[in-house]
Image (cartoon, rainbow, N blue to C red; front, top):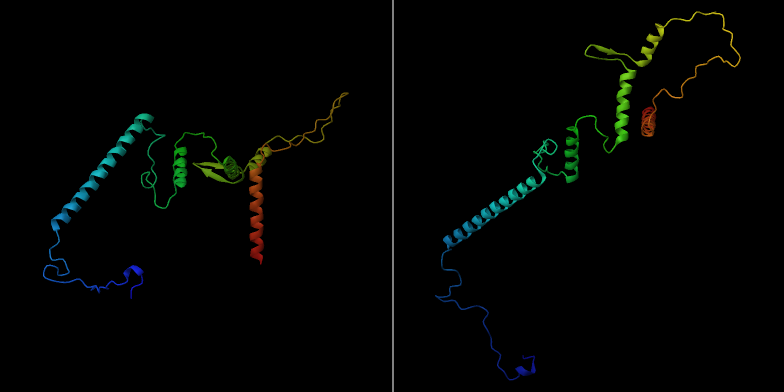
Length: 215
């Protein structure tokens, strides 16, 4: 039934949705695949990729040579990294981590003494810790024996001459005073604030661990 006014009076044709099949139109491809055309296409594609990579490699070498000429030849301070992979990027390693590793490796190649790195407080604490090990413990190195400094002071004091007791006191003149030795304010060594905070934190951690052990 027509729905538009312009279609009134026109005959409705019934179109068969199925195409007609005959000898010239069987409904499928009757020729073979052009194998030579496919091979030529794939060969051309591979050749293009090879030429593309060769051109990119040549451009990269040209840029590297230009940079080397601009910054000069490499020396021991700018040599290639000897990290794992020969300086190449490691899998799952961020750029910042690789830069820190290369910086640490480069700083070790500088002659001593070196300036402090980012964390100078920790370097000072490590130095004092090594000094404490040498001054407060027994050790030996190549036939040289080290003893604690307190024990060394006792041995030196035992070899000093003893002042005779009961000697007649000398008469002081007017304005003179008996000299009295005074203890120094410090022993010539003072911990830094960073070390004191670290020692306090270590003490609290040990106390907490001891309290947990008792429970």
